[in-house]
Length: 518
Image 1 (cartoon, helix red, strand yellow):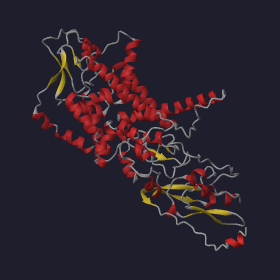
Image 2 (cartoon, rainbow, N blue to C red; image 1 turned 30 degrees about the horizontal axis):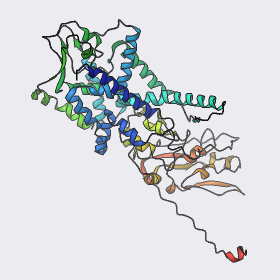
Image 3 (spheres, one colour; image 1 turned 90 degrees about the vertical axis):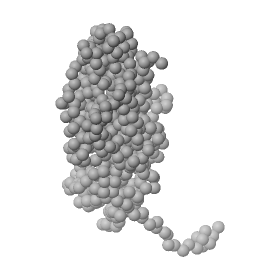
Image 4 (tube, rainbow, N blue to C red; image 1 turned 30 degrees about the vertical axis):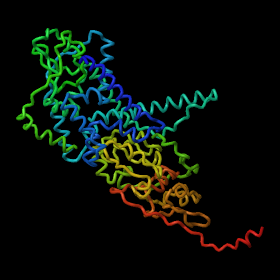
């Protein structure tokens, strides 16, 4: 097979990976099985590395496959697997179509910027903080772009189509409730997308070779790649066509050299070389060089369903409208992390804020945080009970998390995990403030941790037994008081196990013959 066909193969593979990622994040009806989602994210470098470091499972060795491919052939991850790389290529191709005279030129490596960013990211990881990884990881940024920009847009388009078809008595599409939209959470991916598109429109893969820590790391490994693209200086005619199409700007025409650490294996040069002077060549490895980069390899080891089948009946807010505003502010010590995250530290130290769990959550209770976990963990998902609640037996987020920030759970395990405790504020409850019957919190509690007990006259008021509470937030979501809830969930820093409430038995002796004489 001629090497010029590598470019066509690369284009097909990269489009497939981008489409798969798009399908996963734009699955607004959540019909995709968790196994499919996991297989799509399997080869994404940062999530796979974090997951392997936590679980040491064969299902999380995707990053090892990427490292092997890089060691053999260079940065094929950047050219074909990374979805952000494909987005940049689309922008570059658009620039070429708009300006057919557009060409790239060789530029020197931005050495200090490139490796300073990588060093700072490494230090942040060593100190147990993924703040910079969250902001710079190409997969996580792509996830936020799809989850916060295109997913809501698709929902609006779906609902408009459903409304229009309904006018003609066509019900092929059903409307989807849009629970919440966080402008700030959508603003960052929008700005990031515009910056990346601008850079790629002007300079090709500039982001990959200056800012992206994954690109820089794989570029380091590419220095020791076994097979490298090399220019045969004897047969090269010096036309410079290869340099003009090199989106990494790493081919120097005068010396006929390729900076392979910046080469993203796009194979554009193979496709245009008139003398077939560029080929993969077996490179002799200098063992002394490998030894000098031991610390770099140590770093590698160190960092090593909108609806699921459609829920039965959506939990809606009660129709009771309070006449008075509540006065006592909620005092939450901790934000609530998803079931399976074990502790806030585990969650913060492993979540890259890719927002895959947000798109998979059937009730949309998972929403991007702003300051709930602090500025260094911005955009990581939290349980937003004002938006929705957590289904009692749902494990969607634990099934799709690519980094093990949310560990896998079974349905039975999920029902016993206590992610927070219900706090009742009597002074905010309309039973107390307005002498009005309510009971919304008790009606929606799946574990019956909230029960109504006798209060004044015929009124009943909530009573919380926290050993039965799982912190699902159904009570908080259902509570009608504003602006402060009469009952809310305070997160557990470390998740606990809730007790199962004993089944009450009716102690009645019934004389069936007397009661039912017929």
